[in-house]
Image (cartoon, rainbow, N blue to C red; front, side, top):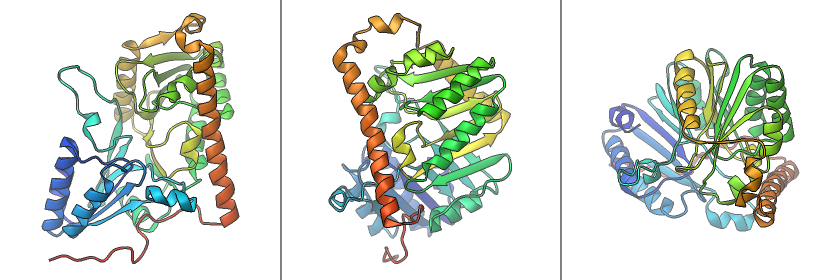
Length: 359
């Protein structure tokens, strides 16, 4: 990503949920400022909640150097009931190369050589003609084109069902294997049924989920699904060595789904991005990555998790409350959006939002 920014000639589009002013973040800031200084148009959008700590100072520094930078739905907009978030993680350079996945910008993703811990995540590097409609969609709001072996899907607020359908369609068509790696794994009943039916027709279904999380209640909610998943013949592997933050799936070894979209209720209500690639090389690399982590993780076995302290009454109650709260929040946003009759897509760079000053 840094190399692509350094080589940029005309434009850089960066939308990211979390951007920290730390060691990694500083390198990105320097690279973006250098690009702006050589005449590249730099546009950056950070989320007001995800980038709460450093977003204001980062965007101010970028704007001072001639970049277009904004914070999407600052925290105080909650008072106006603007609860939607821009959860996308996408970097597009010169409309020729894009990086799409779960990666935020911060030291969380830098390996700690002392402890060996790191946040585990996955992103795709995409190049070619598909980047042109992606650039248009990011600038104007809307959807990238959906044709060819590589397809990029953007969802606006409350538009996540469209991305969810890509998962459903891929799972329903699976013939040999479905490998999932999701840090926040709370699929709805229809997705769970699709996974169970895939396993019933002989498809090997493996779910790599987070045993530790930056959202403490998320694993508690996911563990409530272990019994039905195992009963359906689905392998469940819990990664506990560090934080698993990926949002990816590999179908039959040749289809890759990766992006910012989580299989949970909240992603149905947020601005998200998803790549669907029919590419054996990329899918094979992701498959090997997931299989390696699964082999190093704790495999949940029927009955084994019931003796875990996580299955005590209070953690189970907390997990159920977290899951229901997510469903309630997504439903609340959907109801409000219908009342407002607002369009499903919203441009994070509304016209006239910036006063461009470049020396």
